[in-house]
Length: 495
Ligand code: SAM
Ligand code: SF4
Image 1 (cartoon, rainbow, N blue to C red):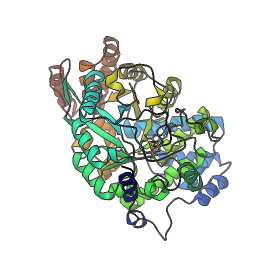
Image 2 (cartoon, rainbow, N blue to C red):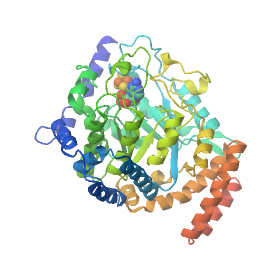
Image 3 (cartoon, protein in one colour):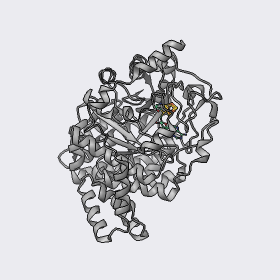
Image 4 (cartoon, protein in one colour):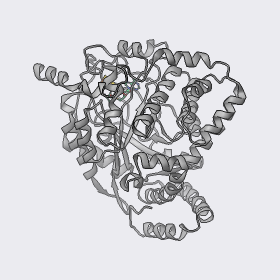
């Protein structure tokens, strides 16, 4: 195994799948330039900031200078204005919809040694496991049949036991599970993937199986910090192999890509700028930016002292600001807030333009079907902060006026990639999706909700139907026809 593992590791990085995208031998993150922009735009003029707000409201990507100016806003009144604009941008692009999902970890084997991660290979306190086909099926049955999830983010480690064949097979199993529930059936309709950087040919295989978003976080965009935290000689130690994985994915035909940074490894202001440069680069090269941006904060992990020692820990105040800046800087993108954050934090920042969040989250390997309740640090990557069930979260969101959408129609009828970017920019996606949000929310209430959630959810649906009747009278009769058919037991009807 030792030599096979070694040769597997050595075969992973294809230099030509990095260099082909570089310009003059450099990548698109210029550390000095980023710091210069942050310094140069200190104390920005409030009238300029308000012009920037207007640009965001027109759903245009901001420039690095404009983003740096927003990062430097400290005036509490302007920050309050920023919150209002962030919510308006979100409503314009995504309406009052929130998408929910659950992470599904398939294994915790890893050949890398990221200093901040509980799964790093030298961390011997971790119990290692990779799910078998049968176990993947069981986990999916609980997620789709009992909890009622329709979307997953399936998480893989970098290791030959979770190579691309394993990934493809596991996705086939996940899509294959169909569980009878109260009136309809439970099924995963979109499996997004969080995986290590892959090669172009491998990404084509995943595209064939039908992945949703391909998500990889750069962790930190700062070159020196990256090299310190990811030991050289490991696959992950190669900054550019990771940086260009979204280029490879888009070249392979994957429709939606998700980028992210792990906040707490380096200065948050730099990371926000890195995410912006990444978005601009993808827009420039492929005419399509990130489908989603993730901004996880570092959490405690078993036997991982780095987490306590980092000097870049992000305060709640800075965390709120970074979400606002991201919302305004890349106005069309989805923003993912995870259950790493506490309920209190999530309840507050959900109004700053977040579009997706997870619930009923368990990140221990096999934890959904094992049915243990306490978090066990030895089998999970880090601790999660909000353990609310999907039912509770949906109820809490409905109380705040947000409708949980289980719609995956866009993905299945080609509203993805560049096409969805245009729809999002013009606000058309928000309107189309409102109809599907109502229908899928109704399905969910019938099939999974507790009586308390049904009651609150039904009140929200009533308001939504009223709104469609007034703003889109031409589609209202068709919507009501689908709505009745769903009440009578039909499922998966969409516009
Ligand atoms: N192993 C793959 C990789 O590194 O790309 C994918 C899975 S990894 C389990 C998913 C993400 O978890 C990483 O990209 C990293 O951002 C995040 N992560 C690692 N350690 C963390 C910690 N201590 N707290 C919060 N998030 C962490
Ligand atoms: Fe492995 Fe990913 Fe954890 Fe790094 S972050 S040690 S690559 S699982």
